[in-house]
Image (cartoon, rainbow, N blue to C red; front, top):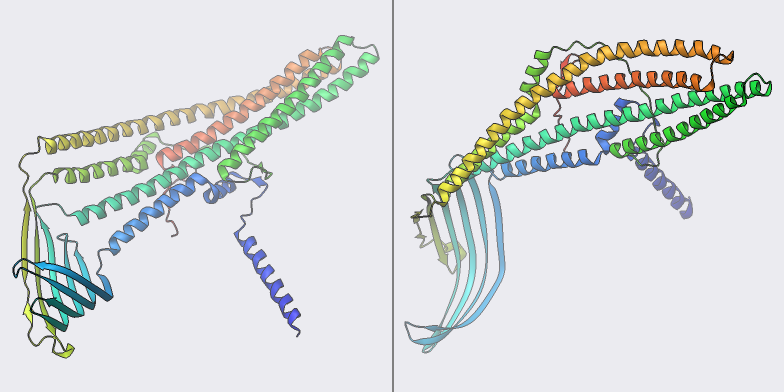
Length: 498
């Protein structure tokens, strides 16, 4: 095979790989959306939901990092070359001397945090070699030697809170709070998409109904025109028919604009390109859903994420109180160290004459007078805790009120849907009967237009009541965190893939 043929095959394979990767990454968006498809698209493309998801993942990584920091930390510090030459004055011998040092060394350290006591235990080994030359009045001296210093150290704070446990607890609360905010954003997004989806659907139905009106007006106009030409109608009827026809055409154009605007808003929420064509399809049926008010209230109060958020705020306030009480307070620190050091010109004899170097240090911080700063900060934090508790109680009352109001709206909408269905049937029969009278010349064009408008209004009112019912069922589902159509609780917090 010739080289140019090989290059051609490689190029075709590379292009095919690129197109395959692009086809795998591109999200296929159907042009005719159902409400379920719209929610799935928003799950992947909505910008606000993406931000909440990233915030949740960020808190997960921070918590993992803090837990990883509880394990042993191994470090190695290398100093391959170090050279220093200085001229100094010796106060004791009252003379100047020159010091020149060339050294090389390394330090290996293992640090282990102690979660139980908030202390740290460290094992450190420092190995090095140095060549030192000192010149002074009366002579000079030189030293070449290897050295090794091995020590075990313990640093333990006393009379204070456990900072490590508090940091982990704060990160756990932040992580749970971020997951709740993500879940709440999902529920809010579901509400917004449902509202905008039905807005598009309503706009589509308005356009369809106005197109039906236009079609009827065009037929009526032809009828009136023929009868006017046959001297069966007065010319004023033709003018009225022309006016009604122009009004219907204007209504169609206006409804088309409203539909386009509603589609753009839905595309923005879904994270779709604005120039991509879409339509929505739905079968809106007001199915009978048995909802017990007391069950909805109890399940809502037991499951609502907003209440859990209030509980987390109270826990954070308690942790903040711990740090506030620790300010300007008696506390101390204990440092213990035991080790052994050796040096020799020969490495193998480095511990022929070892030196033990134990060290003990106890320090205390004793506040004397802070002009009432600590007490004032504690009182301020107590006020914050009280506010958090009051807000939690108020949140419970608000949730119960929302559930009660939505439940009442559902009961009222059931009656309205039945009445609006009857109104459509009556308006349709009235229009059909009066259309016959109009064609026989018993009614004017203005009168039949009024019956047409009455029928269109009845259809739109019925559609509006159906949509309000579906939205109220969704609202109650979110308020109680219970799907009454499927008769099962919902779990808004889902596991995220890292």
